[in-house]
Amino acid sequence: MEVKDAGKRLKNNTDSGNNKSYHMASKEGLVTRFKGGDLILEDGRLVREDLWVRNGRILDPLHLFYEEKKKADVVVDCSGLLISPGFIDIQINGAFGVDFSSLTKDNVDSGLSRVSKGLVQHGVTAYVPTIVTSESDYYKRVLPLLTPRAGGRDGAAVLGVHCEGPFINIEKKGAHEQAFIQPSLSPALLQNVYGSQLDNVRLVTLAPELEGGLETIAWLKERRNEKEIVVAIGHSMANLRQAEEAVRSGASLITHLFNAMLPFHHRDPGIVGLLTSLKLEERSVYYGLIADGLHTHETVQRIAYTAFPKGALLVTDALAAMGLPDGTHLLGTHTVEVKDGAARLTGTNTLAGSIASMDFCVRHFKDATGCSLGEAVVAATLHPAQALGLEKERGTLSYRARADLVILNSSLVVQATCIAGELVWCRQGSRFN
Image 1: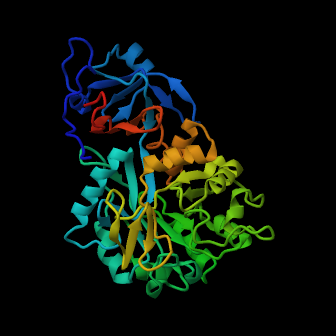
Image 2: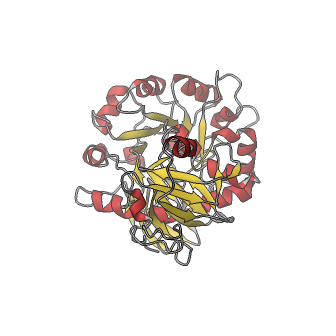
Image 3: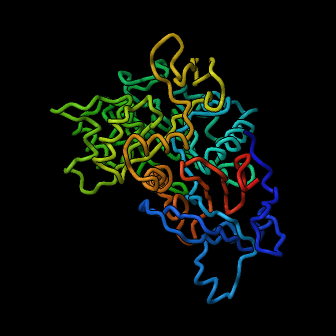
């Protein structure tokens, strides 16, 4: 389904006598009122309350009424629907035929544009393109081109790059190319592999048990561009003690929990033990879950969420094959066979990412864990924003936050997606056509 023209008029969604189109509401100073929907709050509660937007930001209606004496220029009827912050995907390898680990100078812009436009149909308003383990020349050539991009009529925002590797444990390489894996690391080596600037890098996944791992984690935590680089641990053989040391050094995220790490053991739970570790001064660790029905069993998702619900963070780990039919697709230097809803390295039984969309993962996570509808949404909105340090801007419906919204029905099926308060996609046959 293609992105609808963002300028399309929303019939019957304006005040009587007000003939301004919804698209016009994004213009300077105009106020849009999303009326009659249930807002999904940061704690997962649903509240029947109108949402007011101006200049791409969520407004405090009391200020609007009592100080400005202002009414809405456009009213959007959301009765019977849910209004959520836009979904944020911080681990996505590609989609719609685009593989972020196989880009060239000539197709970076068109590739990002294709993915950004496609993701909004799944409620995603911001994402972090992921590059899997690659040769150093690829990082140096492509990282400078993958600049953060504001979301808008052309689709979801790009928040920076996730470098998943090459500083991982070869014993837990998964679908990563063994020839490019680095067996040790240091700040100098990391800059030598990625390039010295790191300006567009937002997230790095590494194995903390490698020689120089803790030193590099601490260095990355201190390095700042506009925002701190987030360090995740993954593709790792770390035991619990090593994982705890990594968190104390500055790691704050676990990449795809349960996948590509030591399995839980009653004598040493490994990285999984971070969910309930009492040795950490504060519980600030988030953990990614691929809730596609293949990477983690429903019972395993339920165990993790019950142990530490505030850290649950949904990721798709989607491949270029997401949104495409079964067949052969790329993941970096590998080919991947997609069949019956699963993506595996060609000729093997190794899972190589998913083909699930974020809205599917939200629905599956809710069913698997038994959490509330609102709590499932929070795992795809507030928690990824918090993990990236963006919770004042994204993942929330708080006043002054960005008006990146997804409008859902009671089954969590996306009906419309808005970026900065502007309609960028609506489901065919919905009231927003």
